[in-house]
Length: 293
Image 1 (tube, one colour):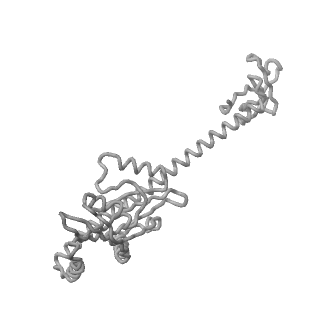
Image 2 (cartoon, one colour; image 1 turned 60 degrees about the vertical axis):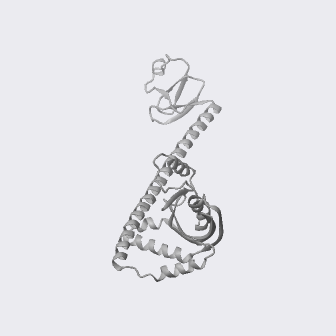
Image 3 (spheres, one colour; image 1 turned 120 degrees about the vertical axis):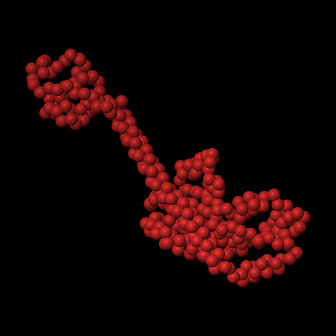
């Protein structure tokens, strides 16, 4: 079956992937989050333990890269994306890599020593919403199959490959199979496209949250620093009712008045009113700003 797993250089997204994997109802075929793997590493860490974990005496006897298979799959993928009209602006934000390998193993099945060859193709698609933004890597195993023959008859492997390579398929059956494969591939690529778009949207949303949090925290620290500085300088910030501008005055008085011409009067008496006491007009009471300790 096709297997998919995800990874990101963002600790937040890594945590989200872990939570999604642990959530009941997670889709079959989704592996635990982790960095991308090449074909050989995937075979050793995932495929063989999953498919042959109970096999007696399983040993990996050889690993052979198959770059032709990787290039062939990459060509098919890009052709399918062109056919689907995959947006080029999204494609430019994605980096793809492909790897394929043949893994030879020996094992014992029902008391018989056998040799088995695994053929694996893996793909990794890395996307980011922009420079400096978190990147996401969606990895998938696109092809994985195996041939098994008795160990004492290794020639059968070459014979089997020759037979398969010389088979002439029924044209009608081939057309139906091609349509079926094309439909499945289209559905897979549509799902992959949706995943990529969701990842880009999530990355942008996370970046916005992080930016807003940093700005809010910075504003809070700046306000605290200003408050501390005013305490050290023994001043209190008032708002001049004539200009609506803040002004710092001596903090040892509880009440302040402004005449509007840059003249201020401070007092500890709540009943003092310079308009009455000095018989001058234009005096207005000043309120403390909300940025005081």
